Amino acid sequence: MSTLEKARLLLNQGRVAEAEQACEQVLEHSPDSIEALNVCAIASLRDGKNFRAVAMLERAVRADAANSISQHNLGRAYEAVGNVDGAIEALSAAVRLRPVYH
Image (cartoon, rainbow, N blue to C red; front, side):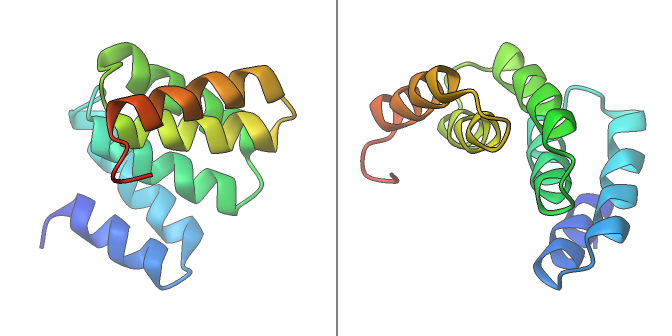
């Protein structure tokens, strides 16, 4: 099992701090891993580290603006920090990119 798979599993089990640690290990070696940025950001949101999640997801979107999952998660993170306009923009982009998913 890869470290990223482990992070996803830990997150699904509610072991947020451990998931964040595993994601950080992945990001040390692959700082632009969109999947790792997303998993780590979701863990941060669940842990109340909303601004950290926003920063990670903004990195992910800068790396690949056409990634609907990153856009969707960024919208959720913006909502969590009270950035309604940013949330609408990111969630709208997610729907445009992949309407069936959302």
